[in-house]
Length: 265
Image (cartoon, rainbow, N blue to C red; front, side):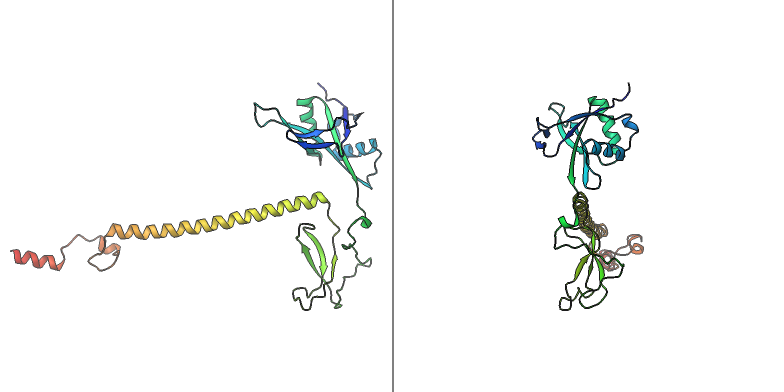
């Protein structure tokens, strides 16, 4: 059986909501039916451009994300829930084709797009200025700036120029200028997720180190206690516990026992 070439495409911006059963598509969501020959041989980038042409969008001014709905059944006794999945590359595109063809039999694509931000649309307090001649920026002290990296939630991993005296609050002139352009929102969200993951794993490692140190301490105390019990309270050699050479000797009566035996005789 050959793979179908007809696609039902929904412009789903603002038409999909999340409910108790997962992603819900509004009944009034418009759609169009289009034919894509040999979809399995098409790359994700070819499909994305094809969809943009269908909706007369410009790749320079718009960002477009194809999506599909996946049915997930966690409980065999309950109806399946729906999850909206982004198609972001060749692997996820082919995964969508295989799942839709084998289990649904119909190719339904949901697409959302947004206008790309220009420099004028961004926060005026944040500048992406850089010298056209490639010269290194200087701070208000007329000193070459250092390059630092922001790790706040709004701009994780974004580099910026900064006054080289920023470590001294009395001398810091407060000069800053972005070196990198602002990252896309999805990239920022993903970087924050990974940063949180790293922090969480670091905390787990610290906790495991503390538990390991506590176990070592307990094991050491237990070994000492067992050694004292096995050798008795005190050995004739006077050591607690005595050394191995003393413990391996044949048991001999102490001087007080010899005197008592002599008097008895």
